[in-house]
Picture 1 (spheres, rainbow, N blue to C red):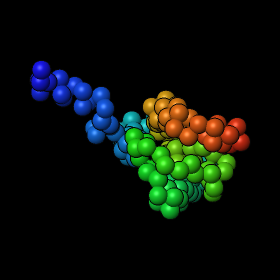
Picture 2: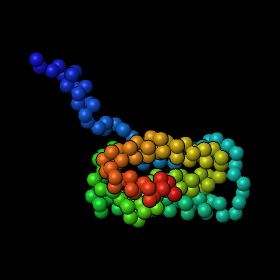
Picture 3: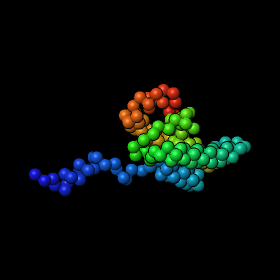
Picture 4: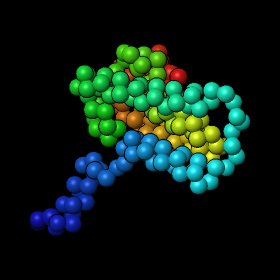
Length: 166
């Protein structure tokens, strides 16, 4: 008995990764756009006018982007995919990965926090909280489960030595 095209399509969809999944940098861009828009359209509750707050925000923003760039270079050097939906071939344990299991996500959060401090509104800070929760629940937890299954004891040992965030 031959398979119908519909049977074949449903079998393929369960065995192939979904191409339409949104990657974290897209969420970062949406968060940054939301911070900018909210600071212009609905600047809800201005933050206290603290000298140097915007400069601190700028430093956090740039430092976060530099950290993401540096971590991306580590992935490239290790020849392992950086995209969350691709199988990892190597466990990164050096550089920022010696101190945090998720330095890219932490850097993205820091960068958005910097943008929010530059915007100077509570509404901008709320975007950072939403982004952090989204990264944790939509990416970090599932990535950890996959890494644990894929890399086994090596990953468990790494988890016992290195904190999830900071």
